[in-house]
View 1 (cartoon, rainbow, N blue to C red):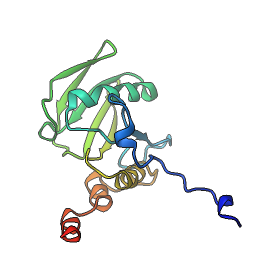
View 2: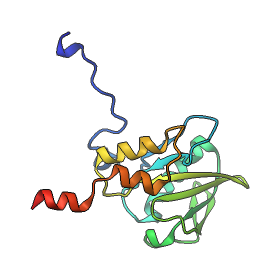
View 3: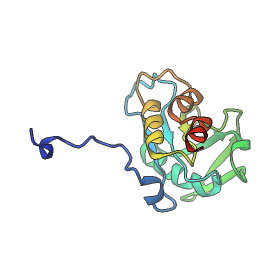
Amino acid sequence: MAESDTPAPRKLLPDEIHRAVRPGTALLRLQTTHSREGVLDGAWWPRSRDIVTELPALIQALTAHLGPIMRVGLDTDAWEGVPTRVVVDDRVVRLESFPVGDDTVLITRGDNDHFALLVVPPDTTPDAARDAMARAVDAGNVTQAAEILVAALPEPMAEHRESA
């Protein structure tokens, strides 16, 4: 078989996607099953920890797939300048402090319909982000967000030793 006959492996996010996307674009994956049996419903890779800048694009993307978003629960210690609400497309979305850690956001639509999203740290490499996001949306996933990130992200000390 000629090399040109071999299909290139499909990448979920191009290597340069984090720099290539224009500001205001959400990098998001949602689980596509109706069962919602996994621990997480999706994954989000923000460009920074500035919630006022990052959140509107996420809310717009989620609204397109899920309908109107009412609340976002997040660990306020993990984000810069968290207000109590944001207005996106003329809709008020409340932000509430939850001790979920910097690796998770909770999304609420309607009164009691909750979605948990893994938050991939902004400075994550594209390969590690792809891996973490794919694990988060696996229909059978029973792994918590923090464990997914530990498994997917390179250890800082290992990187430091390699560069020394």
